Each structure stands twice: as structure tokens, then as C-alpha cells.
Length: 250
Length: 290
Image: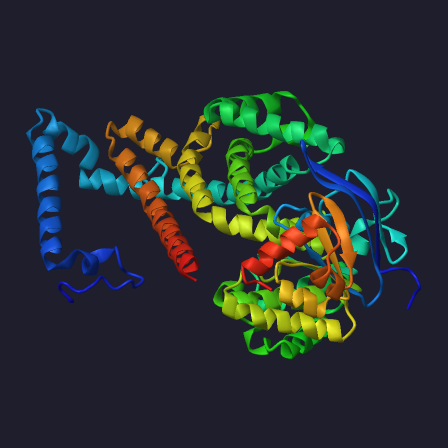
């Protein structure tokens, strides 16, 4: 579609008060690439994702989405956000709306899609992810796994060019994790560009084209999964992966 | 009645005779009867009880003041004005208070003066007693000689005063509701590409308003009663009609009638509020289980 990278971060800094969370992140994601961010809690994975669509404003640096600089003053961030789907750890469905309304709200209000078309698209997506019979339910009637699938469908309904997934399985019971990972694999197969923060190392190794290891707000090491997981260069990466293996998570 | 079994968590649990059990009903009936009997005895034994019975509870005066008589306003008829004042004020309060609450929450330095006005407004009108606002609006605005604004019927100034004062309270209720909606809801909406206003309108406000309906209704119960204060501007509403009756007949049954009318319209709203609170509680408990 275009030769720009799907996403380009340059020298992104972000602090919360005294606490410097991102200390100069440089990252490029090519179209159709799946990049996994790994690292300990507090290493800045979630903050990094929130900064990509400027839900968290950044302190300095540039974020460029498909060649358009979202951090530029003159750019309407809302317009670019619509191209970026983001799914959070805690689902964040709108509890006062049915599943269908959750999915159609943004297409209808932000894109101006008419109701019939928005509902048809939503219906198609819900069917694909096995949720069609839940379309008229309210979120609190669904299991965690179902809620997270609805959240993914809600993001997909905006036809995003890039999906950001923020530890989307961390709030789920272990037996529900697999159904969400299957959905993400399916998206990867279709060529969706994704930036995924995750603790599921086996999954990351499986799905990612590239792994980025974050430590204290910096990308310490990145590369294809086989080299990161089998021959990490940096001692901190080795230490981190060593602990994961010890805990039986890889 | 299941004795000894675990209490069934049904909609009526915790309410009514089912939760109390047979013995409980007996005890509660006995204590109720005893309680009111004691009050009745004390009132009946008071030295002035005969006079009070005649002045306040004489059946013919009760009836006369309710329906009105030659030259004297009917308390019931006048009460219709209270109902109208209440309903008009309520609509304007709900709108004005929402505007104030929303303005108070707009971020950004450009909107500082608007936020300042909203804060000053709520501080001012929550602080000044309603009756003083009534005097100032009711006598001040006509004094301005400002075209039609100064020549409205008295009752209109009453409605304006009620709206000004109650909007300050209700705006705070709304604001509490808005702040109770978790920021992650706003983040989710913004992440989908909705604007700040769209997020507020479709995601935050609907949840906020649902949560504050019980406290809002509580404020409206207060408003129903305070419509009586509009009489200080000369409108003949129920309390004033009762006063006129009492002054000309030397009998205060009219006050009892007016009081009963206020209670009668308050009770349904109060019970409805209780119902909503109970429903919310059940929902929260159900949500906690899920």
C-alpha cells in the first residue's frame, strides 16, 4: 500500500513526574510485521504502547504512523488513532452498551459509517470470532475470554492498519488464555501488523517476526525470536530469560 | 417458610416478612403498635390536647381548607402550583447542572475562565440560603426594569431562584458521577478514535448519570418541599393558601392538609429512590460474583 514503515518511533521519552519510564525508544515496525515487546513488569512495555497512539502524551521524540507524524502539532491525533487498534489488559468494554453497540460505536461516530453497514460489519466480525450469539448481551454477562475477544473485535471494526496489544491475556484465567492467543495467531496469519506486549514467552517466540527486550525504559536488545531466545547477547536479557525458564514459562 | 435453611438470595431478601420469619413479624408488629400507642398516650394526656385536636384536626376544617370555600383558596388547588413549579424547575435544573458539571471538567488552560465561573457558581449558590436568593431575584430583577425580564409573573422568579440554587447542588452530584467513571473507559473510547466530546457523550456521561440517579432523586425530594418557599414572592401555593385559611378561620387544619399533600407526593419518589438503590446494590453484588 505504501513504502512507509507502519510505525516509527524516534527518541521517545516519557516520565510520570520524577519517574522516567521511557528513556529514548527507537523502534520501527514494517507493514505485516509482528513485533513482541518482552521484559519485566515496569520495564515500560505498556507505556510504550499507550504513547504510540498518544493516549499518553510523550515528553519528547517523534511517533510516525505510515509516514504521518502523529506527534506534529498540526496533525489531528484522532484521525490517526482510528488507524491504530489497541486492546488493553483489562478489556475496558463499555458496560452500559450491548456487545453490538460496543463494536459499532466508534465506526458510527468516528467514521460516520451508517448504522446498517456498521452492524453488518460488526456481525461479520462477531461471527468470525464465535461471538455472534452474544451480540445483544451486556459485557458483564460474558466470560473474561469472551470480553477480550469482543475488545479485539471492537478494535478490528475500525479496520486498523496496526494493532497494539497490551498484555491482553494477563487478566485471564489460564484456561482462557489459549482462545485469545488463537485469535491473535489468526490475525497474524492474515498479515495484520502488530505490536504486542506480552508475558507469554512461548507465544511470543511462536508468533513474532521480531522480539524487543525492554529494560528500564530502553530497548536493550532486539532480533528474530530464535536468536533472542536461544542466544541472547546482553547479560540482562539472559538473566531475564533465565528466570522465565526457571519459572517454567518457556 | 423455610426455617433454618440458608436465606434464599432472591429479590425480596432482606425486605418484608419473608426475611423476618413468623416470629420476627410478631415481634415487629408488637413493637410498632406499642411505639405508636405510647406517642398517642403522651399526646392525648398533654394539657392542651383538646385545643390542638380542635385547631389542627377538626374534620370539617380539614375538608374545607382542602377544597376551599367562598373567598378562600383551596389548598389542593394551590398545591397544583407547587407541582408545576417543581416540574418546570426540575427540567431546567437537570440541564443547567449538567452544563456546569461538564464545563468544570474541561481540561486545558484555554478553558480556565469557564472552569472558574463554574466553580464560583457552585460555591456561591450552595452557600446562599434559598430564601435570600428568592428575595434578591424576586425583588431585584423586576427592579432592574430590563424589558420583559423584569415583568415576568412572580412565580417565574421563584422558579429561576430554585433553578439557580438547586443546579449548584445537582452539578456537584453529576460531577461526583463523572469522576466515578474509571479513566480507563475514557482511554478506551479515545483509543478508538472518538473525540473528547464523543467519549464524554457516549461513554462517560451515560454511566455517570446512571450512577447518580438515586442522589439526584434525593435532591428532588428536597426541591418538592422547597417549592413552598416561592410563596415569599406572593404566589399563592399550598403553604400560602393554608396560611390564608388559617388566618381568616382561626384554624390550622389547613397546615395539616398542606403538610399531608407534600408528604403524599414525596413518598412515591422516596420509595422509587429506595428501589433504585436496592437494584444498584444487587447489581454490584452480582457483578462482584461474575
